[in-house]
Image 1 (cartoon, rainbow, N blue to C red):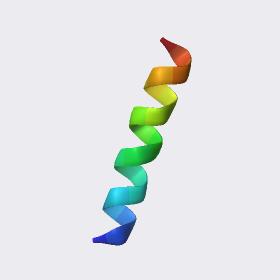
Image 2: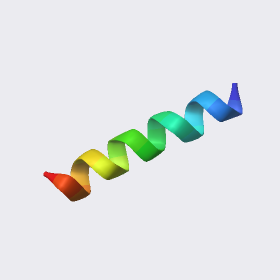
Image 3: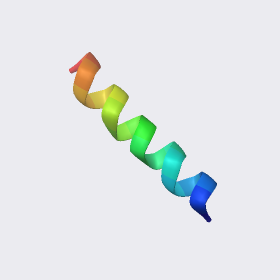
Image 4: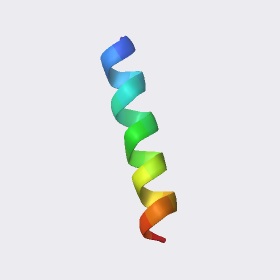
Length: 19
């Protein structure tokens, strides 16, 4: 579960940085 949360957080973070 924690792994999924980390992946989701990374995706959101990367999206915010890229955009």
